[in-house]
Length: 506
Image (cartoon, rainbow, N blue to C red; front, side, top):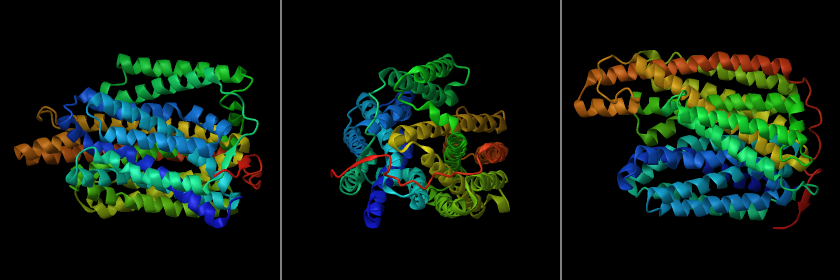
């Protein structure tokens, strides 16, 4: 076990890597109009610039975790950070959309290695008594990166060229790699199975097809042939993957994990929280910008109450779980999350519930619910993993969470779009129904105060509907977790390194 000082330096390295991943998930959003102009990119090109990152990011986590167990988690984490850094340089100086799409795909592959390996290292470095706090800090860093993306991106685009939104990754990657090399011990499974090539191919292609269908659904419609083909192929390939893994002598994914109710319901709770949080972070920035009139920098800063609530909830969840158990704390966290959703659904365009102070209050409640539910859930799930398979187990958890987050953005985004479009008057300029951002721009050009008011009203009504739907779903998840999660999570007291082969290589 590492010393106390080196453990927290190691956490700093993992936090920095999580911050980079969180930022990169959103920093590109503010750069898309500039990319369209400077690279002469079509709408389809812009979609692929975004999707080229997300698809490999979700699809490659499972094999990345298994490879980390076999070849060394620190080694694979360093490789993922290096790939992410090299891809960031390539994206910075890309001369066309094809080169940028390729660079973004490599960034997604690097991110797919960083995510599961960084969480799998937490049980190696931290004993059970400190692991919850470490997970809270790691989760908060990931959440903080999401609103920081538009803030950093907006500032850089105001002062530099579009490539600077990728170049900013480099110093953080370099620092993170140096800290990982210096403070994180190597760990691996000394009895790791050989690479499960059929399982890897099926999981990668199945997840890629599924995530492609989910990502494209809001823009094309859920009945579009491409969307249906992606979803159908994804489900079919993943069904074959499960069948192959069940029969394999040395499977890439340990299906035995799903016999653990702590793993299943902890992962289910964490996935729902990811779904809700991703949906909120998709909707709220649009509200802050288009309805309340803040710029990208101001919007990012105004999402910080959610991050602060997450930190407070995560730290409280760690202490409460030690006293009351996961079966009590997780449902309480989900209930607090539901309260935040219900509060948010009362947001209005005018009156007391329209001001940012009210928005900040329910964002803080949401964040507290996320922390209270997510941090104990992840701690409980990590504690159930066979310590020699923490890489593949963490990859399973992160993959499920990532798909849940994609479903949150797609499903809740589709609901918001439909409610927004139906809430507009029948006679609005062409393009106003596409998005609140488009309507705001049209209203500003035409000086049409009526269109601006109608668009804001329709958007807030749609946002309220999304939050109102999430509230009961959170309550339902809380009830299911309370009923099916075991009352005891005994067995967490084993030392983190007991099932690992630790090396002194630096």
